[in-house]
Image (cartoon, rainbow, N blue to C red; front, top):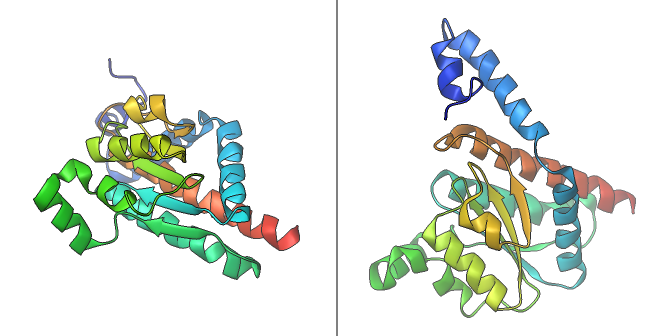
Length: 206
């Protein structure tokens, strides 16, 4: 059932873009307030442990979430340089167009991440799996492989969390109505910027 504070309601009760903008920002803020801050802190500790043990943090996502995966991967890789300390080892599985199209063409689109992980993902590595729905088959398969390989999974999800939320070790869930990709993906990028900004200051001052 539609809530009276979802994007459809906000649009139908706006008299133009300015009113919709104000409603959208308020709606995003309300969604962010429902995120479990304890989970955000837990994920920061997962990243720091991976760094201290020399493990790799992998990122995966489709579409807008692929862009967030690439962005988050790059931001986290830059934390060490900005803090003037040893950095994080990161790799985005959504970045190699040649590998993704080859795997998709030869083995099926749901294998584009697991095919890459097969020879690179090791025990203790971390997978950050990003999916607004939480049900993207290739991202879910990647999370399953990560767990089977002795890795740690971090899910960034929206909507009701989907299967990804139910199988992942750590879940950053932005609760939105089904199909509301904008607020979910906005929040995922905010998680990136909050996390990396915090880690820069923490490592700089430890």
